Picture (spheres, rainbow, N blue to C red):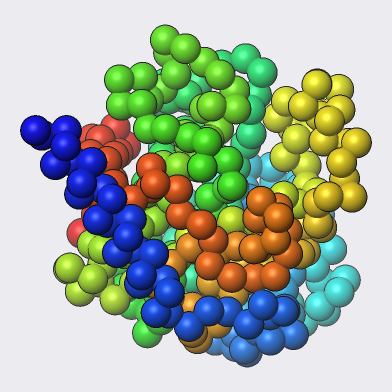
Length: 332
């Protein structure tokens, strides 16, 4: 009976989310960076902004006048990213902050620095990710590395920066999921893939966790009056360094990837859904944006399909409670 009730509740929630999305204003399908409103006076933090989609986010935001903070592990790559941005936007206000999202102590140090010097934070773009390392690896805190980097680090960082986000008149948290989330499942009995590690299954689980959390963050913001817009986005399939740094270009997955590059779009195109969520006045808290072409790999911007596994409130609540316990970060 309990199982039947739970299944019924998840179906009701999925239907409600679909109906709600249908009633929202859909993005202009050909929305582009030229449609971005001025970001003068806005402060934006982008994790993983030294390459790929995160770099394109930082570049576009700098062009529209935002003060951009790129947070990533590699200091040298950070300097190079800032130099590249300033070559294209000479008056860009962009800076680098060091952080290792797979190390909670490093996440706390970044949050302490920012809380100490910023009066507010307008947008947090949770972009950084790793994908499918062939062998199971763990973070310094003992978490499976993909869950640590893609999800737990961002969960902790967002919670620690919530006081700054609440000081903004339009605070937004934009969290990147993936079309891979549709193939994921939250295995609470083996969330760290200790019993069975599948590189792509672990990646899908981490991105499904991000999606569940993004929706739950919006619900909690609404219930508690935080005034934060939590928005999820995915880039489709974009040509970035994710494959090279994960399974490797010489892996079977990498070789198949290389043979189908014409089916994918550029990192700049992949950044469109994130930039829309971060800047468009009509972007809706609790929504999920992405390309809407074949299998959502690329195509016009719109509402992304929400996997049923991201529509179960009980799972989202369980994940939230577990995340607070494992990271030691409790939201205000």
